[in-house]
Image 1 (spheres, rainbow, N blue to C red):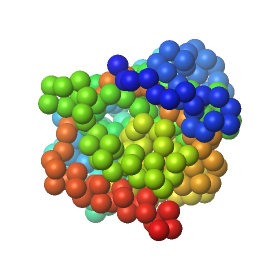
Image 2: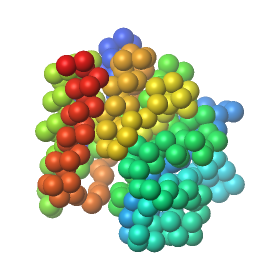
Image 3: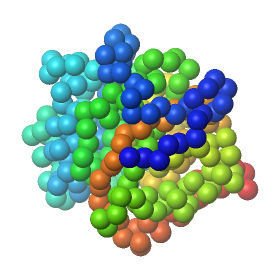
Image 4: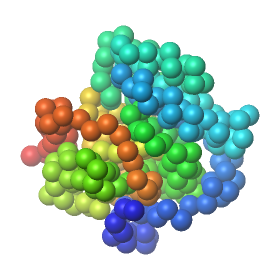
Length: 265
């Protein structure tokens, strides 16, 4: 279980935090109303896990049960391992990019192709995606008009240990926020790919390129709307492929660069 985060749920206290039991699925479904929800999954060479991610959230599709989700779009970022074909067979709409523009470009392409006024982003490499990821991410947005961005947080096991994953998060992203953007210091997983956002927000502030996208989006929403427009929800435990230190070094450089540019330093 994720360690208890700081209590930031009171009005005016900044980023709002929701625990596992605080968002009821029935309330979220009832609050959907006329909203159109698109799930966008950027993916590059994730053939081993993409089917499981899609199948986990398919029960939410309109006509397949809950009707909370109106479409699932997988943006295949130049994969060479059959990611696109597996995603299509699993029931997603597939948008193929041939240039390999990176995560930020894939997310932006997904938003452009989506019809939703609410967008849920999910990572394609997660081994234990659950249907309630979508419910929890949508909850704060659908239940509170003042919330513009929702980030997931979770425990990340590594090498058989219950925690220790998220090395770029703990060694780069969160220290940068504490120093440069202290009003966002309580965000537990600033680089989480599990994100929900209003389309109007994306259209106003845009999406950065590459691995900068998550850090940039968080900071830009905080600067534009204030920290109280951001919520974070507990998704429990998240299992995914851990990257090499070389890959993480490149990612950390992009993340730190995005934070420094936005700090004006």
